[in-house]
Image 1 (cartoon, rainbow, N blue to C red):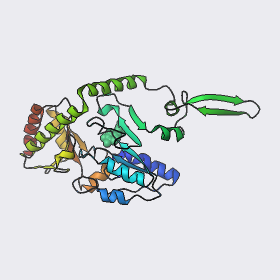
Image 2 (cartoon, rainbow, N blue to C red):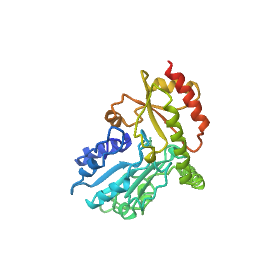
Image 3 (cartoon, rainbow, N blue to C red):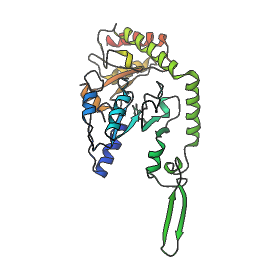
Image 4 (tube, rainbow, N blue to C red):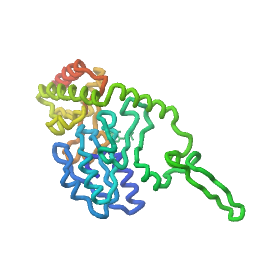
Length: 295
Ligand SMILES: Cc1ncc(COP(=O)(O)O)c(C=O)c1O
């Protein structure tokens, strides 16, 4: 995996590695927040079982060349799991073209509800995998042998094998509606709108002398996420100031502390855009940022 991962693509693997005695290798990230592909590719060996990588960084918006990694992984007989929490809501993701084995994404980042997401996987891989949770629905049959005083359990087919208990039905329906809504707009249009806003915002933010932008200067391979810091101010103070004007940004580590260590940042403020944002909002944002600089 890489050092730009969200904690949710680090911590579960660290937990599993302790149980199964696996070794995790972390690929480097360049000082502009882009992935060091040579380092990532150099980590593969015949022992590599799975490579995990975020498609889009939630800190910098950098879009990773997933296809390049899946190609190398498959040459080494390894699987690839892609964290699409920040890509699926913003770009068109073709799991077949990108040759992903698994892709995970969250409902709440794409106009859907919290507490629900999707794990895509290749059918043959899911068929081979055992359940990770037990309960109702994930079994085909539970029979009890009086003679042996034992239960015999057969797992249900996929996807039910992985869906123990009463599912989050409302969440599932709401997420499907969000997907349909985004499909009606079209993911190409979503990305186009974000890119226009990002380019405009970066240009305008550069008017602010005490503001430093982080991440790559080449915006062509980025989504609408702009990490920045204001000289002499903590990112939390910056966010609080914006909040008093009704402008919401995120501050802190954004659940990606290792990346902040690489970028040598105590924390960062993050402006991000989606389909509902406008140029006028960016103008207002820059106006307030100019006031913050005077603090
Ligand atoms: C890149 C990335 N991966 C994973 C997650 C975790 O998603 P969730 O909170 O739905 O588990 C997030 C957001 O929180 C994210 O931005």
